[in-house]
Length: 481
Image (cartoon, rainbow, N blue to C red):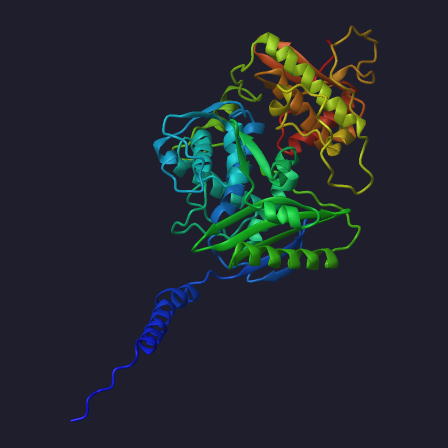
């Protein structure tokens, strides 16, 4: 009987290597290929909302951390309506503390200012920060998700449902490339004062420097200034990006990228396509904010909106965060910032975007406090036409009260002068046509700070109020006194 010939060791090792490679392919490479996240994309002219290119854009897919765009949109809304302040201390819950990375790593019971949570969610994409924001605004993650879904519907995001504030994979937590592009456009136009946050490559959070998850695209693509990345194994590498070149602005959303580099390359190609297709000049059709409801009608939510409506037509008065001396100093810093913005001059016809102005004259204390205030040349257009805040001076009352400019409008009562002045700037942007030449005044009352535009005729004041109320903004006329 012939004896079997044993293969030499080198051949045995070669066979073993082939078997090992085959096993790796079967156990690792093949499964990953089989479950690769679906691809979807949409290219939009941000100025008009016109869609320039789509690919599977209405497929309901996992949005991952693109979800945080909605979390931040609602945070900006809550700040604007006095539900919460950027310097309010938020207590981190056990639920927020246990969120998986990416995260800040905060402990349950730890307190942190809202502005730092917003920076961490926008730039680092911190999941614990996003959860903490939602809980601080609506009382619970479930209540905040309900508010997210209601807001999505109001914005026209017809195929989106949210289950959480951070975007980690959950059953039913789905969106589309179209819906996320719509959300990105609303962030740009509904809250321009906060949009510059998305183009920062680094931010400071309590002495820590955080780096933007999208810094490579921001660095490599000319004109890129946001907005948000996202990644989970179920979603792939997602990105909603915006870029401005001249007077053209393009928004691109990509779902299902295979890597950061591959996703960025694809987004850059789609951006180029968008800039090639978009007209050089077009009438800008800005978005409008949906009617403000706060947490009204949401089970388990902290009902700010219904509380304010049952008590007064004015915004709910929030506690005064600064003592009188600090507040006076802050008011001077705000005035300096607004004066700097005014020096930039108004925008040219059709301009919609701008660089950030030099804030170096501001004191170190003022810079972080003023980050929520839009001091860009877009605001300067209104500041050039609307007179600055100054003390009320005695007037000589004539007999024809309707024709003389002795009337005004009130757009809210606020807990401190900073919020009142910010409301005046925001309102001036919304209604510059009727408020041109009006005098901005902050009237100190025993119950708060009234934000007023004075120096109007009765007819102009009436028209301004009707136009603002049509935008679901608070307004009532102030007569001669």
